[in-house]
Image 1 (cartoon, rainbow, N blue to C red):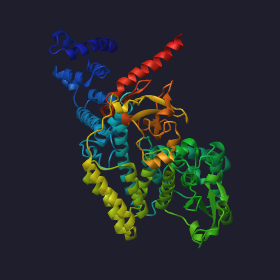
Image 2 (cartoon, rainbow, N blue to C red; image 1 turned 60 degrees about the vertical axis):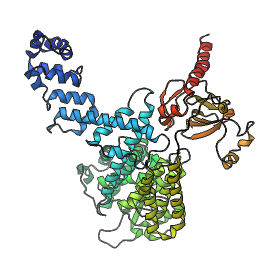
Image 3 (tube, rainbow, N blue to C red; image 1 turned 60 degrees about the horizontal axis):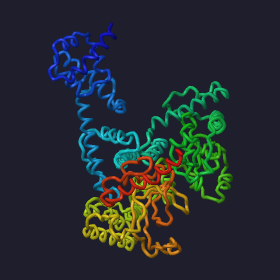
Image 4 (cartoon, rainbow, N blue to C red; image 1 turned 135 degrees about the horizontal axis):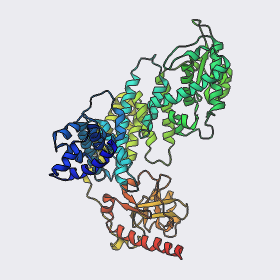
Length: 628
């Protein structure tokens, strides 16, 4: 009966919502239904928020059913923004109508800001203070983040520019939050030994768009602990570790019992789950991210050691981290409690080497050199994190393809959060800003960022006067250049000096010599690079030398290159170019070419028509040949 009544009434409600003055009979039919049936209908998912608003204004009974804190508006909120529901407790009183309004307003504000970024920052990287609009917005930050995620999840190959800037804004917002959490974490006393928590903050900061949480990583480790307990039960069914409850920090003192735990761990980790040190791809940043270590079941000495340490401590074995040079280790005390100990009273565990237990001499053999006793000492959480970030910093300096140097920027941020007075790293950060052209939106704001860094360096180390002076000079020169900048340079294909330009922005091309796929995002009638670049790239050896059009291209490997016209040809099988900056220049991929966004089209206003002609000639002819 209720179902039949609901089906009948569901036909009435949409009509009721659309009519300004509904028929009395229709309204009477609706309001006479049982309350639970009416609520079921209003929550069916076919009505919009506007529909609910109109329905609630028809009579008192419907208004009461659609009360702001009731099920109807909660369902409207849940259907529209399901990912936000995890932030609400079932026991909390929530004014769902008000939450809906605030979330809706936050979404509109977020979209307005995203839309403005392309026009403001097309010609340069998003500057240091470019996110101030987001920081000054009112309302819960999670609402803004959710809207940005919605933009990133938009289907299809459209809205590429929106997605490009939404990603940058979301990246910034999450990194700021994580960095604040890390700084608070670092203020904990020295005896606070949550190594895993610190490692997760580093993981989150370098991967802010991934869904990484300490809770999820701990849950994965707990599942490994369960497997170890199962194996341990077969070794010693009365082992005290089996009685430990989740979250307990008890330690077992008997060496034999500890040894049984380590044996069970080694079997589960290395034999059953096939964890191993990543010798084949050692210099890969993924080896340092704990969520990736668990997914890929491989890592480097420090990340494997943190996993091993965490599991051992949960099972009552008090292992300690050792900041051993070139190869991070753990130590396992063999001496009596309370006795005076030296380095020979410990066994050293190589988690990278399948949990192998080493003596002092074997540790030195492992790295091929003799070291002092101090290097066998235990280190605190901050020192462990310093080494992890130091590894990332070294990898960031090695980056060759990623021209945004994102890993280097992230690792510098992390290192300076821990040690803000590191002069050489401050200098490196300042140089990186110069190299990438990351300048504040207003020239005078430059003083607030780069010049502040340089002044801080000068205070810390007056001996850096030369380097600081050089950077200050170039900073001031940049300010003067910004003052002298004129409007946008427009390049017309119809201009006589551009008569030799054969290709247009948005076309998918292939390099004749190197074979890479790319998309054109800019062109010059002749090579505009300096003499040194022309000499280093051996441009003079080309048949047409530098007196031919050159093209700025985004390459599928993530690089940006400047290619001579004679080295490019149409790609007869066009495909999307997976370059991180595609959205900076293009709004859509059509399947055969990219459509420039408004800012790029302003600079090349006649290119799009040529692209359409080219696509019609190249790809339509190919399709006709296939059909024949």
